[in-house]
Amino acid sequence: MSKRDKLPIRQQEPNPRRAFLGTSVALGAGVLGNAVLSACSRGEGTAGVAEVGSGAATHPGGHAAKTHVAPGALDEYYGFWSGGQSGEIRVIGIPSMRELKRIPVFNRDSATGWGGTDFSKQLLKDRVSGDTHHVHLSYKDGTYDGRYVFVNDKAAARLARVDIESMEVDRITEIPNSQGTHGIFPQRHKTGYVFCNAEFRTPQPNDGRDLEAAEKYGALHTAIDGESMEVKWQVLIEGNLDLAATDYEGKYSFATCYNSEGGTTLEGMMAAERDCLYVFNIAAIEKAVAAGNTIKIGDSDVPVVDARGKDSQYVLRVPVAKSPHGVNVDPTGRYAVCSGKLSPTCTVVDIQKLADAFAGKIKPRDTVVAEPEVGLGPLHTAFDGRGNAFTSIFIDSVVTMWNIDKAIRAYSAKEGDKAVDPILQKLDVHYQVGHLNASMSETKEADGKWLIALCKFSKDRFLNVGPLHSENDQLTDVSTGKRELVHDGPTYPEPHDAVIVKKELIHPQKIQPRKAARFQMYQAWAKEDGVDLTRDNKVIRKPGLVRVYMTSMAPAFGTSEFKVKSGDTVQVVVTNQDNVEDLSHGFCLSLHDVNFLVNAQDTQSYTFKAGKPGVYWYYCPWFCHALHLEMRGRMIVEA
Ligand code: K7E
Ligand code: CUA
Image (cartoon, rainbow, N blue to C red; front, side, top):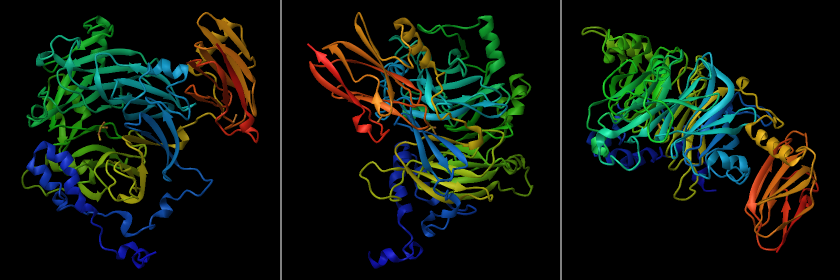
């Protein structure tokens, strides 16, 4: 250990990390060729703020007690993370930041067999790469009801639902006429619609005609029933649709639009000084759908309300700060906050005024009640339930804490009024924050305890692991009315978005509840084959398919060998008879790319082609017993 290593870090030189920013932010600002943005990205943008905190490195370990959850003790909150390019959801304990589980969604996962098992293949239709962006839970009366987690796939325009009882995906819905499905948000008064925004405009219909006809391009705001996961209706809009939100009463849904210009190039998309927040009037749209005032697009049967062009009873366009990104509704349900991205401001819309705007009594812009200047590159906003907002500021690499009431007073102040400064604090993040969220922030029960900032760059915060650095999820304590950094959480790319939920609201089962959708499929097979899934070990041969029903109970499979012919299509259906918490088995077949998990009391199945003649051992890949290694059998393949 060198002498220097022994020094408390506080005595080392202030690290040069912030100096990195100018170079990396060029990624974001340089491409825009925007002198204002790139200049400020060198750190000048934070001048004049109430406080610029620094990384916890100046007092290492100083806050350990706050996040310390003793071994064996449980966290206070579940965090649900969308795993970005990994296509998964992660479940993280807060405040310890311990990763508790990964839920495979739009990916192939070798630990569970997701993406290879029959049920998951049916849902995924063999598309096993995805890009999960936004994760939200189902609601009742303005708070989480603990039933479902919804997450979108931006890559293939899909919405998946996780059943919290089993913490696994039970449904995936493909969204017609859409590309780049980005923002999603469920209704909050009940498990009603989940709204999904198409970020990319395409010709409508997108079937090879109108490739260059800009006026034929459009994007869809889609309503999916959170119970049935059916697509109920869509609204066709001229602009692109980015982030989504809903009110608390079930009246409106929202979408930010950064390309109101309808451009297809970067310059074209940035031309206008203001873009808009689309406000969708759900009752009016439902009425149009019921009355058949809809169109159909392409080969989809989903009714589409065509609301392109001007404001109508269906859609209002509220002018907001340039190229808005996030839209978040505060826990009182009164205000929708849009972050400017290319403007240093947030635009605050008073949801109570929207009815008058729809009725034509006031202009859409008159619903704007505040526009605080929060910093360069505002993206998303979270709330502490005490009237304060936290906005993630990408370019400045800070989170700005501001007060909503003060921002409204400052906006409406007349000349000569005493100046009100809504900005309470700017605290550095490390580095380039995207999403952020506070505990229960998207509910009426926002409790302002913890705030997570999901940073796109970690730079030198962690040991070097090669060109692809880990991301950095920074946890801050906000319970004292100030953000205080308490933990850096390195994560595999990309933790995109997260919600933090009180643990009292989440009740997963410990033994597989045999009620998930896939059990209906297994029951139907078993009935057709005259088999009792829970007990029988039988090989059923039918034209084109050999179905092998097999049980497992530590430390043996119910079937120690079975015979098939080379080239046979084989379907192995394994039921785990153990009724013991955490006693999982699996089935891994040598040289056949077959490997899946079967939890206690679960059934899973996998279909494959038998290879060349010979003997192939299958075995249990999950350590289950002292004789776990002996838990195996032979598949005999005959010529
Ligand atoms: Cu959630 Cu990047 Cu997909 Cu903001 S969007 S960061
Ligand atoms: Cu069963 Cu290892």
